[in-house]
Image (cartoon, rainbow, N blue to C red):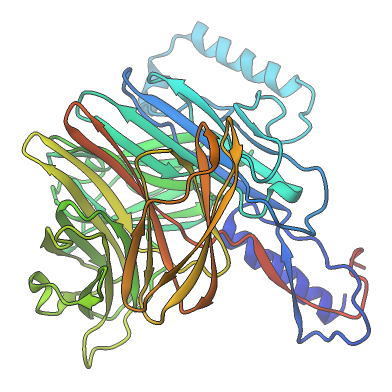
Length: 527
């Protein structure tokens, strides 16, 4: 096997590690002028997404939306994008329950396992389970609804032309109870390492880490917790089994006896892959999902803070061996400022969680928090997230915004409605020109395209374009056209009985394209 072939394999392997189920095919033969130094941009041919069980409330109503942007070429023909319930039931039981079973119960379990083992092999990972949501074509979203507490975790894969940029949104409305609110999340790709600053083990919080395994073999995960003084003691956070094609919710407060209002959670796997996300519920402010922070970096942008936010808290963690001295800024409508609440640099000790209350920092204008080394400070990688509250008194609602990377080529968010959606675009450095495409609706309508210019150092908040003749929900796709980097987020707001319910989803790049070294050889068959 020659070096060019090995390079192609290395690229495909790296892509799979980043995006979960992601694969590319060998490039078509190129002309004799191509060299190995000229990479080709090719669409991925397979991607995977995982959606955790949405709620334990009988009052919950969850809308799932699946979408792939139109316009990607060269990914083959046909293909499918399906989300199906995980084959194994949701796991939230004590292993000691098995010891309580009678011999007759155990015999029944053994017979069921034997029958399953003798069943004909399935053609594909989801062949035994009827898809809940099946996407038929790029450019038009499909949606489905589940009510109550029995909505399962979903696992799915997209292939062919439906794979590049495939996204799925899970939006749950809970009208009463501790978990009341609008809980939204973009379903995640499986991986092996996740950081969640902004979680909590405080008595006023109920935070669960949901671990979802998409594969046919078991995974083993470790959960480490870090508070303001460092690692929180835990005897049960290591070696957590996640059975094949199942989802395991783990209550953080059961992993440690230490109650901390601001905790950073690190999820890693010893074997296998999982999708990980935190469901956070507060006594007075409802609940929402906390997605993983972008990879640790010396600088970070956290976009999408609503203009009417009444409380904003920044939580930062330095996972390396060095401390960080950070300058905290707000990029708003008119420019970038240092808020009075962040006049002094934020000191983040290595291995310890730091927090900073910014109050009503946006003062009526949507914005984004920027963090980076203070003057004279070292370039220390950090992860970060925001806890954001809207409303006052008994009518408060909480949401979380993790640090997110820039949209380098394209990013998409599904489940936008005719009313209540806000798109924020932040250009932390140079001005940027951005194309925004509103897709056709899930029930009908025609796509609309609009271009925006975002001035350097500012945040532009807009009511996004709505498809002509919209029926149902639609997707928004963001594509930078020129200028500096752009960070994006979408807020979805619904008022219920006076409570300003909302959720914010960031738009990291969809990584639907990958650079593959060009070659003079035909690598369609590896020798």
